[in-house]
Length: 341
Length: 173
Image (cartoon, rainbow over all chains, first blue to last red; front, side, top):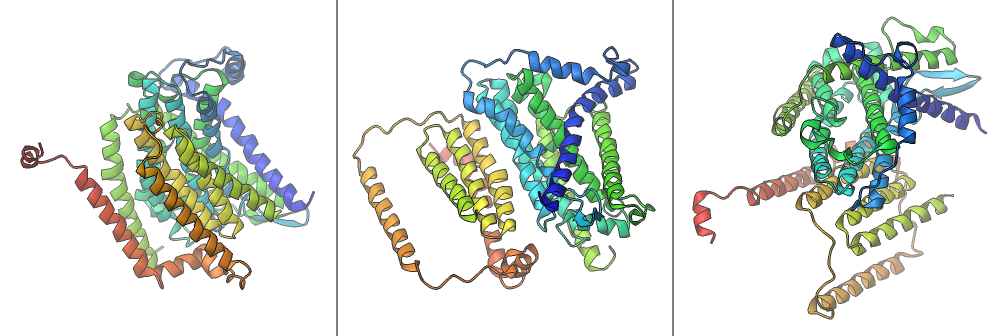
């Protein structure tokens, strides 16, 4: 096996290992954290501090009966949960987690695909995520599911516009669509949430809508649609939607951290003093910690805000977020041309 | 290796394109369209233009076909039923049209076969930066005109879909 292949496998392995830990940890955090916010204990029976709750839930998911609703379109019904994992398990490919380092005499950049079209690859893979939601609802042969699906497709298309526009804003000062260059740009100057506060705010709100999290979880609004697009799903198939949602939150958070909070870097921390392997692990750890903060923020918001109404959601997306994103685009472009950034 | 990859993507694109027109269930047709578009994106990568491939996935698969699916579900389109009778005028016209089209395509391919090699795609056309520079300098006017064309289509569509005014409602029946 050539060193390049080995390096590639190691980088992919690191990401996949991390992403697979996200769902059980988030499962625990999403119950314990709000429990303390509401002055109660939350699950604390399985293992110390209830830490093994995730394993108990996984076992439960695996042994539950695999139900097939009558009248469901079997092929698409089985396909939909698998599609939920596709964007989640592919978008990390273009996210950098360290500088170009030398390990064992071979130079390698700490990103799986070092491409000039990197961010576009991320966005295009992420945009495939809506198919799983849409097909799940349609194939279930259930009115609530179908309504959830229709909402999902309209919502994700609408918010993708604002999200993509803010991403463009964040790329302009660095002058590159390669995320490695965006991080390098921020290492030399300010983190971009300082220079583009409006763009960051729009990105943040759109990210909640793209991952279907409260206050924008209209596709699965329990109070109106039972459980929305995954009403008819149970056992491991439901768990795959669950994992897909958490992993998408993770990769989108990692993108946000890369664009606005300097990615794997920390100010006043000089990476060049360490050996290659330490740089790689340190960079990845810093990125993971930043993503962890973002994920906690997702939970915090979920237990703080009530759900939007559907028309409010659409109005916010098209009449507030998109114009603000375009405004940020014009301002950033003007400032970059004027040499202020 | 490259030939095998080409054969895989080409056959996948053709096969799923046949399913798009042949399948009676519109949702399956749409999903086949997704597969066909992804396979075409694979062909773009083989041709050395990842940028075009990524745009293909981002725009067509990620946005436009999702809207197709949205409309199909919103209108609750059922399975397509077979046409009432065969041998109608439409069948004949369609058959002749298909023959003419494939004849023209076959002739084009036949004539270009064995001729001088097509100019290689240079870095200038393929790389993101080069493509952007071309689009915003040499081809700026056509690029803007296409944008205007899309705007016209949007305005027209929203005019067609608007609520009729009271005057028009009186006239309509």
